[in-house]
Image (tube, rainbow, N blue to C red; front, side, top):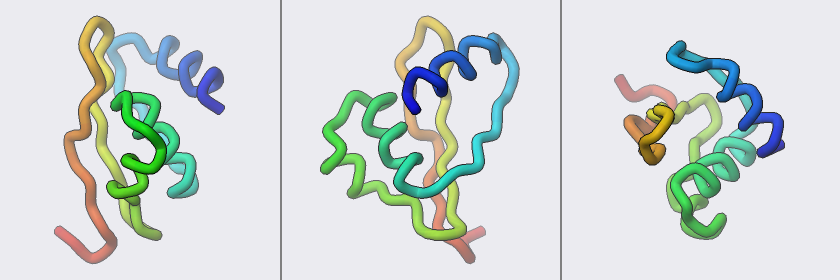
Amino acid sequence: MLSGFSEWIQTARGSHRVLVCHGGVITALLAELLGTEFDVAKLMTVQRGGFAQLSILEGHPAYLMHLESPGEA
């Protein structure tokens, strides 16, 4: 999953991307991109119907911009 995500991001080069997936996949990506253990990333769990917004710019570390549960706005 991580290698496929990496390839997908490399093809983005300067454009925006939207990834719709299961919360467990989002948690695994958060752990990898933020350089944390999976157990730590689980503390930032995306609830069913929620979303996470990340900034992934080439040459910069990834960071979490927004984490939202359903019904927030």
